[in-house]
Image (cartoon, rainbow, N blue to C red; front, side, top):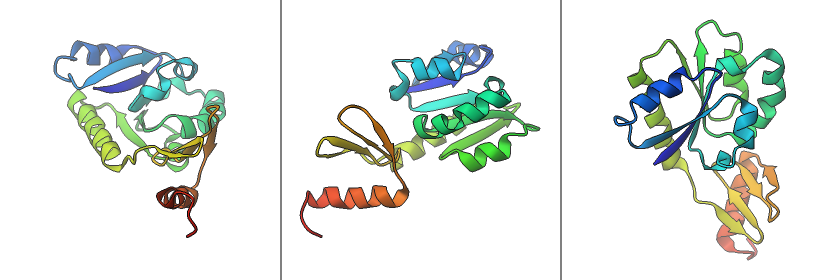
Length: 171
């Protein structure tokens, strides 16, 4: 079962999806009213997808959370109106982000979610242990023993995967 976080100021989308849960029995939906609530959630690391509505962003919260979002919440599906000014910024600054425009049909939303999750499962490489560290290649993160996260570039991820293959031997 896939866990999907819906981050939205109003509960309309969450309520509709909850009412239709018999049709979408592969998903469980979780509602959060703010980004802060999502970051404080114990389930935060267990979500497969984050649906983020534009209503939670005012200009100051968008700027302050942009860096944190791009590193911590993956993958993201943004729900935006057609005339949203932040659309270009979002598509440029967020790694692996997707955008759906309002208004949309529920079936279209679920099809996009299916595609994102199918793509995510195909490309997810299992976590790799390197000494006391855990490499999460899909997220481009190296976690230390004390749960400190280190962001990595594509090249750094490739190098660490190669080093892990040879388990400390000279290359």
